[in-house]
Structure formats: structure tokens, C-alpha cells
Length: 480
Length: 104
Image 1 (tube, each protein chain N blue to C red):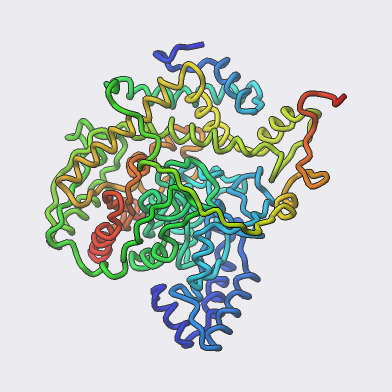
Image 2 (cartoon, rainbow over the protein chains, first blue to last red; image 1 turned 90 degrees about the vertical axis):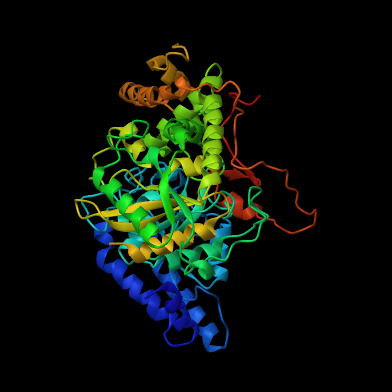
């Protein structure tokens, strides 16, 4: 049942919000032990919220477009009075004094927050194995990772624990786990969704976005949380586009380019490495489906995307090293006592952060340090300009671009934990959109040779989520 | 110290950076992190081939303009709530160990 029809039934009094929530709590009870999608299940709170919604409906009220729909929230979204850990020991037990704007808007739309989902610590990772509270496993095959960093949100939707979830995407952390778990995942244009109340990782890259089982459900959730927010100075003032209204418009006449540099393969020298043959075959099949639906599909070149990974893994750690300086044992979270304040800062951070967070803080500190700033951070920022220019050039010819979301299907648990560089390669196709600030989304499109889902990434120029969703809807309808 | 032209990190570089970032590393961690961070910098060496002299740096996807809110009085007194989340407080303030040794 789609989210839209569930909400419609609850709003019409045909079924209770309570029954919807109970059904999902039962699914969580039955399978959460195997998956570990959540850091916190809000069973009592979500039941109380459902009863409140049912009372309002009985009194003739209409709580909104997501009435009674359970939503799982990545545990780096602030929830007033409710633990928000970011998957880190350093924030264990911290209860924010405010709600994120996206969380506030969910409440205004009538949604029910059913729990806080597990993630890589401070959203740093591609497998959800970097959580201080243990890994999340892929519901489709528990020997595989769900992707990351929003792996708990992707797994919650894939396992039927919640029809909708929110994640955050700094270099692919929504789209890549969506691909690996067979769900839809969307990174909106930078600034489309307020970052107020999202614990910062890479502030010039972070965006909140939806996970859902279908393109329509993702559109419904994105419409509910998107739009200008005066509390985020990078929030885009333009009106939020109508997505639900354009889903049926098809792709007739659209010009769509397959990004050669992100397709790999022996005949493409100037491409990123590691794109699996079965993944590439599905993307080519998706392109054919779009052509059959009336789009013009050709190969496109966005040359500097091959440098995205290198630039990103200097820029994002640099921003992280600055953002995470606030975790000093003074104002919130963990404190490890020591005789002096600097020793207390060091003891707290050493005990509170996991290895991946330490790696990125050190990498970022190095890239920003005297004597290395120009060579690393400065040059990476210039590469970012090249990537944005190359996209602008491609979008003179094409309305949308296409690529794999992730180079492979879900990889085995533990395969990459000792090799960070290998782990980082999982984001090679998703990073360019973050660097440019553009929207992109992952749509499930068949499976790989191992029977696990493949995601196709649809990329659009800034602010054009509407056209992106039209193509996504066509791909969903044509998926094998 | 290695030079930016040869991005292989030394163990001493990592120790220095850890100190700047207020992280204490064991000898084993220092060894492991040095290799892992050097791998990332080695990968980033592909950027050396690019001619970036005339390319402006980009810090943010879109041009940022200063945003000011209306100066309206409000009552957002969250002091008690904020202090309640702190590890140690005294007289309505955050309490920390001495920063510069013993107070006079």
C-alpha cells in the first residue's frame, strides 16, 4: 500500500493511525534483532502520537498529507528531548533542546516518528559499520552491508519497519544505501531542505533527503520537508517545486546523457575504476528504457568527475575537522575528566570518537594546516569549480544525466573495514553531485549477478528536481 | 616533514596533526593511521596533473549572500535546558577544569 493511500485511509477515518503504527512496530519486533536498523525505537511515543492523530480525525480535523505514516529518522537529526547520538559515544545520552526543521515539518504533516536509525558515526562511512552501536545489516542478505552512512534508514524502509525514512547525504549517504537496499533515495539540491538541526559533517555538502519504497512516496516526503527556512542561511528562497503533479508526465522529448566517466569498462579509458559489469549492464538497460519511453539518450562527458573522489576526501574531512571541534567535553555529551581543560578535551575526544572519525579529523586538520592548505584544500576547492563547470557544459546539451549509483551491489560485511580507501570508492559515482550542489536520486533497477539490487542514479541541474522525478518514475515503471 | 610535492605522510606528521586535533594515539594507532592517511593522499595525487592556476576556488555550491533576520524581541530562554545537557555546571555556567593550571 502506498504512503499516499495509507494517509488517505487514515484521514478518511477508514483505518486508524494506531493500527498503522502497531503494524510497523510488529514488523520491528519480529526482525529488528537480525537487522539492527534502529538506535532507538520510539514505541510508546509513536503509539501515543497515533492515538492523538486518531482523536483529531474523530474530532473532524485533518492533520496533513502524512497523517499516521511512520517515518524513521537518521540519528543525526535533532529531536527535542529524544536521544540523538549520531552513532557516536561522544553524544550518547544527549537530548537536543530543539527539533530539526525537517522533523518539525513532519509533525506538521501528521507523520509519526517511529525511531532513530543507526548510521556511520557522524555520517562518515559507506557501510554503517562505523557506528559505535554496532553495524546495521542488509535486510535482503544479512551477510552484506546496507551501505551508508544512512544504512539504518535504508534498511528500515527495505525491511518494512517504516514506509518512509529520512537520511543525510554528504557524498552519497542517502543514494548509495538506497541502491544497496533496493529503495528509492533522493539527495535534493543543496539548500532545498533546511539543515537546521542536522548535526553538521561537511556543511557545504550536507543535505537531508527521503528514503521510500516508491518514487511517489519519496516525492510526498520531500514535498513535506522541503522549502525555505529562515533558520538555515543557505536555504534556497525559491518556491518548492510540485513533484507529485509531474510524476506522470513521462520523458518524451527529454535529452538524457549517460556519464561516460562513471561507467567504467575496458573501452573507456578516462573513467573511474571499479564499476562492476553487472551494474553497468543495468544502467545501459535503464537508458534503453528511457529511450523507449521517448527520450533521446546519448553518451555524455563530464571529464572532471573522475577527480571528484580525491577532491571530496580532502574537502569533506576539512569541513568535518572544523565542525567536530565543538565536541570538546564542555557543553554536551561525554566528558572524560582530567586535571586541566586541554587534557580533558583530549581525553574526551580520544574516548568518544571512533577510528573513522579520527581519521577524517586528522586528514582534514592536515589538509588545512600551514604549509599544506594550498596544496590540498585549496586545490580541491578549485577542482570543485571544474566539476561544476563541466556539469554546466553537459547541461547545455542534456536535461538529465545518468550513471550507476554505486559501483557494485551490496558488499560483504567486514570486507572493507580495514581498508578505508577501498571503502571510499563506494561513493565514486555519488560524490560529484554533492560537490556541485546538484540534485540526484537512486532508483532500483533490477539486480546484479548475485541477485541483489542495483540502483540507477538520475542527476539533474540545480533546482530541477521535477524533471529528475519524471525520469525516476519512468525507470520505476520499466524496472525488470 | 614531507613536502606537499611528495604527499606520503610521516609518522611525525600524523602525531603533530593528532595533537592539533586534540586526539591521543597509541603507537599502534599511529602506525595504522599513518598508512591509511597516506593512502588517501596518494590517491589525491591524481589532482597534481591538473592545471588549476586560473581556476577560482569554490567553497559553496551557490554564491552566499548575507542573511539577516528581523530584529524582533522574543523570549527564547533555553539556558536551563542547555545547561541540563552539559557534563558539569556551576552558577548557571559551564564548569571546566583549569585552563592554565592552578587559579591564584
